[in-house]
Amino acid sequence: MGREQELWRVGLYIRLSKDDGHKESLSVQNQRKILMDFLEHEFQGAWVLENEYVDDGSSGTDDSRESFQRLIAQVKRGAVNCVLCKTLSRAFRNYADQGYFLEEFFPRCRTRFIALGSPKVDSYLDPEAVQLGLEIPINGILNDRYAAKTSADVRRTLDMKRRRGEFIGSFAPYGYAKDPADKNALVPDPVAAAVVRDIFRRCLQGESKGAIAAALNAAQIPNPTAYKARQGSHYARPGPANDGLWTPTTVARLLKNPVYGGTLVQGRQRVVSYKVHQTVSVPPEDWYRVEGTHTPLVSPEDFQRAQALGQGVRCAPGGEEPHLFAGLLRCADCGKAMTRRRARGTVYYHCSTYRRKSKTACTKHTLREDVLYRETAAALGVAELSRPLLFARLEGILVHEGGGVELLRR
Image (cartoon, rainbow, N blue to C red; front, top):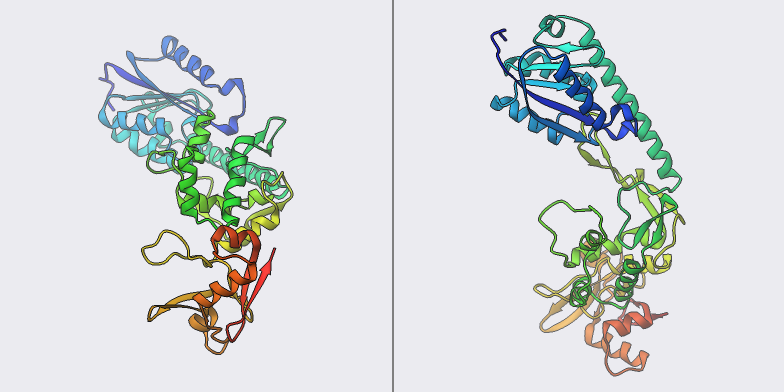
């Protein structure tokens, strides 16, 4: 980089991490004042301020920061040929990134890099300190190790809170709000909690997830994402823009969430490392499960019933609603669900263990659907059956070998 350079087009880079807390010395405003004071009184050479690039609440352990990437794009275009920041750690807390940008990228783009802290860096006035000295690399290693230690300390703290059943999410689950007196505790949100209870009630009455979603949409009840947005939250799910409508998948996800039965489950995902911020799934056996941490919106018994009803309930090919007895029938011997099959215009039920797994593990337990309908209606003393009626009055139906049925009443 020759000294014939006449004009430095400066880009100020400012970063504030969540780990910095509320230290005034690291505030965005303070960093801006320091950098502008240096430009106006100490900078050597003619300069013009092109722009400032601020990453507020971003870690310096990788280079995926939004504003940092905008700055790098401007450097590549030649719009910025001088990068100015408060300290090396504001730009980098990753030793590998520091080495790449200072020793390869900025020199290749003929870009001056200045950091004002200790050590002070100016790749134009003192290029040998960057390329050959030890102080800057050693400082980079120390910054990297500091980030590693901070990350480990934060993870230990969060794991401790998870073990104690303290809620650590950024947004409360739909149906709840963060307790104003304790941000790590959940309290019911009266409006959304009423919707959650209604969804479970409909499920326990035998309504399908599609029917529940349709009913909520007909009542113009916003889905969880839209509801949180209307409450002023910045919550947003990845993917296409949310249309505010409920779907069977949304209903299914809600019905499976143990938080509504009073159990807090956290730690389902983790970041790969303090440098790689990509999240990966954690095996269920390593999740943090704590019961009784908050007020349940449904009883634990009703929550478990909803889980049982969600297993093995299928619609006919091309159909939108489950069959009348779907989710109710169980083999009296092995306890597994009965499968439905049509043969020559007649519908039969068979033990799923016998049909799908092993003919020696159980027996067929064959039962015709019309016989099941007739015997169930007679036992309940009604002329017609419906899923709401069945689920309101029965826990289940056991099918014995030979076709006998046993109604498990509520």
